[in-house]
Image (cartoon, rainbow, N blue to C red):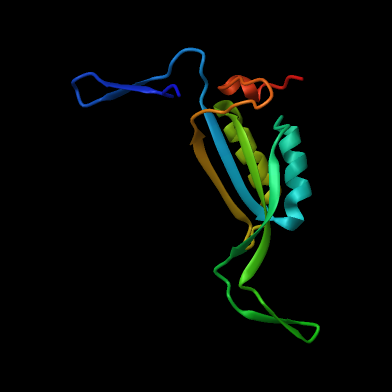
Length: 140
């Protein structure tokens, strides 16, 4: 596994970070959103040129823990159903993806969701065996 960065100091307490040639920074974006906003977010991501992502239904425990009555039946609000969207992309697509998600998912109410961004060291194509950001290219 090749290192993503090389760090050097220049003697003046400054750290200089060098990125090896032919590598790009990759990020993982995880967004937890309301189920009712999924279609809006999906369309916004497509418009932002984010053409591949995965999603799944997840359950969370929120801050609002009270019982509610709906049509005479008591429901607990402990467990909240949400959609989690996962995107692996090059660094230049992070801001457009976040803006698309926030713009489409925001209602202004408590429970709109969260977005998490973390670095991705490497990625591999199972079919071709290639690795690095090249596998994020839209090829057939």
